[in-house]
Length: 311
Image (cartoon, rainbow, N blue to C red; front, side, top):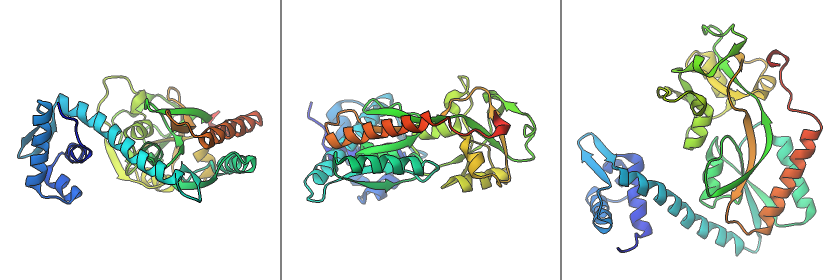
């Protein structure tokens, strides 16, 4: 069997993600007949059917799902090889760290300062992305290290937990459960949740808390798109969704027109530092060591502040 080419993998992934040949062709800037021919060529090469086609669109077969999982990893690896090699050859070397806007600015500043003052490697360049973008940036090579809030379950990524705090529910003031002091995960099954554009599957599951609900559970209805915490709180205030956030959000947004409620059986919000499992970079290792030491010192000063109402 001949090896698959990168071009073929890109064609297949586009169709697998769009589930529509016309949209995938537009995304790849190629004609629909050429794209269909490429997919058929892959199927002939592998000797399996990867997708079924109907007037409603495209559906992946079991073999198609397997190829999509591996193709996504392979394409990320190809991208990472090129981007990290190019950075390594630049005269102005830099360590790219993926971050998101949020309440951990002070901690990240201390880590960055400690690393740069140690002289252990090139200067840090921060790459700011939306919620859930950080692991994607790490995997495809746009970043060398990532700060990520959520669950990391990817085999090609190592991580250390830097900070952990309780998560709480956010409800509209007139929600039937707004006056209940403690909620359980099953209480909010079926409630719509805000959607973070571009978030990975792991980040979406964490935000929705569906990973914590009993199985089997119904699909979580998607609420409006939000780009930051302030927008999320507005969506909840207007009774368009409920949400699950770190407890520090109540401290940072005391004037929000929402109700915060303790959750009895929900996982905490973890801030992690993540890096590629196969990394041999001394700079990455030095940055991670600094992050772990600074975070440990911060924890020794006292636990994360929890609002009195949630104690």
